[in-house]
Length: 351
Image (cartoon, rainbow, N blue to C red; front, side, top):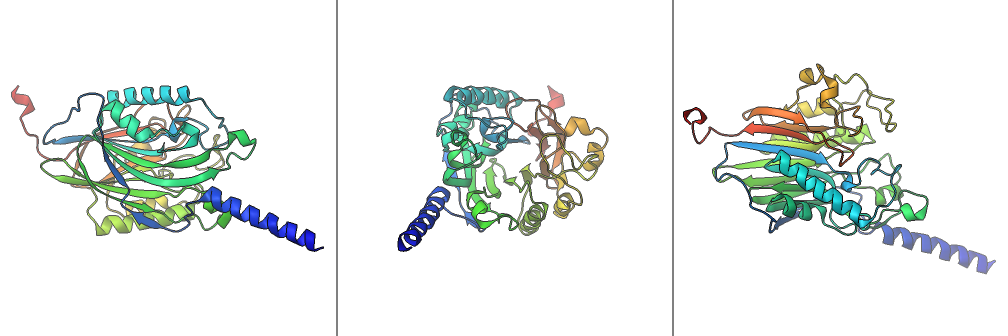
């Protein structure tokens, strides 16, 4: 009997140790850190104005460059050349769209599934962005997902958000958000943190503040709480732009449940209404979205059926244009917007 009890105790201790090692460094609560800001050598000439009057901002959830199925159900490991080719194609597409600031979500910083490549740093070098801010939202020794078979496991993961900029990033604050309390504690040990990544960029003649974020996808109560915290931050601090994957639908969305890609549902979701309390404007207002939903949907990329990605901006800034860009590199489509932030430095009609 003692042998059985001892064996059972050893088994329980082994399981606890295994869970602890796999999920390390453990994090269930909200945390605030300075993140990491990099100055890197680019592969080409950086093309930026000394004192820009117009800036272009792009937001894109990259699905760690796996593409559709990156959330698990359709995931199967790929070889190293797959990610290298995806990275080169991504650099070409970003160079073509030529944003001044790129807000990225779900980008691997050092993960086994993508061969430990710092995707943000490599992308910045290839597409000529000398400044990179990193926000780690998901870090574990071993992620046992997708569950079966074992060779599909993500393994060691270090992933999160990144901001690429042609202009100096002078400060950063990263807020890791509370995980959904509706999920078991042991599940939350392995679950990624959603986050706010706030930076300040020096444009020469002025500084702007911007938040890159990725909000909760599967728990609308948790997501609404995250947005309430975000709105509180916006009202207390000077925030010029907020961009990222909000995982919410515009109020006028015709379809709010029974999606083809997964079982997410957005009925009675208050996320958008909570965000509008911030006082910021959105680059594709709901009344414009309602006129042509299909043109503004961002997920999934191959056959979009909803809009999850947004850029909000301070009312004193003039929006010039906003558009959803075509791409097959991720499970999301990128959103790009152009803003006038100050009076032009020259008269374009005089030439």
